Image 1: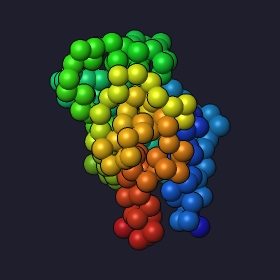
Image 2 (image 1 turned 120 degrees about the horizontal axis):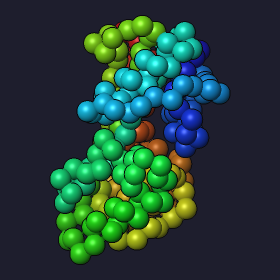
Image 3 (image 1 turned 45 degrees about the vertical axis):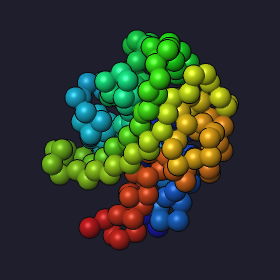
Length: 196
């Protein structure tokens, strides 16, 4: 079975990778990685920066992702800045609080999550990397609901769901429809077909 090195320190992301790739690859989470400034103009740029940095550091192929929440009423914010929406040293709770505050009184609460995965070998350029995309449409709730997940999960209700937020779903339930799960599923198919 192929080994896939996932460049993340986020245990929630690591679980999603392991859950979906389990039958085609052994997911390895490195214990230490250099910090990467996510200064790219797009999710793909940031995913590449992280994958290339990990590949160079570890000396093997690495996969990394970048995800963003795009809210229609905010012109696509927070988008590529989702992880730092409330400031450079913010946490998930402050990001959610800022988003709910900015949407106060707004009727259009439509939004979508997008994930871009990048698989990169050491010393390779962006055009040599492989990219996989996933998207999930939904709505931002007016308050937090649920204790599962991470990031914006407790305020995002997917269109394809049953009225619960991602924060109210188990990891297995979320994996049937999330943006990251969809991107990882494309990666899974690529790996199963021999990475050609």
